[in-house]
Length: 132
Image (cartoon, rainbow, N blue to C red; front, side, top):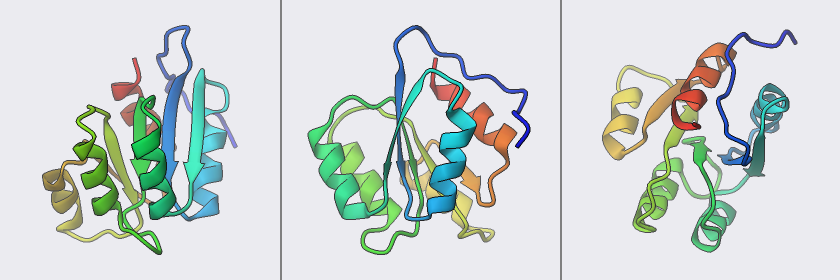
């Protein structure tokens, strides 16, 4: 895969990105895209485990959530994350695409919405917007 032109701006401390997605391909793609940058990527494949992680771990700089997970949907995870009273930017990344879903996600509190299959340059641009 050719490396995209977009770069991630990070300071010397590694940033932590939490990826909540049950799709192995999506998780591997995000890992591959970000492997050359100063970021730590935590991948969790279930909503229940993601909520446990969010309630236990306080250090994360960005969260990427698939809307459709087999046990708990991305909206519930977002709600639980917001209940922790921490500001963490959250990106909805989903193959569930129709005319209303982007608006629904943004109104629910997601900072950004990205469709699957993922445009690599768009993903990097959005991540870069929040990881400084």
